[in-house]
Image (cartoon, rainbow, N blue to C red; front, top):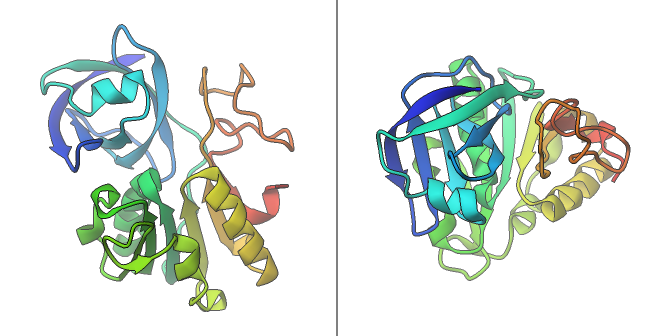
Length: 233
């Protein structure tokens, strides 16, 4: 473990913040770190850039993180895990809620490679939509209808011709990932679709077994990014 200083915080809403660190991590989009707010539980967080994480307050550590004072030091292990594979062609992003975090990092990476990115982004309400201005082409859904289409990101996905895309990248709640996997399988696109999977992790290095999927794959070691044909949901 090493320490990084909190350099800046962007408070997107009452429950979501992006925390910028004092140094950039040698990392790729889709990788995660194990972050320790000293005195609290260590947690896994996807990187939203080489020097930031975007966090939603859902537990004790994340509640502390979203309002952590600048200048505070936090403990970091990583980055760990298998990242997204790149493309310089046409890419579709499918994000649910805070699942936008690793896709912001990926968007920066792919656009620098010359890829054309289209984002489908669903959240419960407009308050939970973050980093929308970082994307050139965006379609939005909210469950309460406060912005974009009233519905879920799955409703947006119905209007897309998936075969138009060289790669599809998905991140969000597991129930959403499972539904998207069903859809891409019907189109024969599972090998060209990559899913960033979230599970509770204790070690982050494939030892403890707390993040094992039904097929025996460890999210921290073999993932967190999996091709659709690798997931046996």
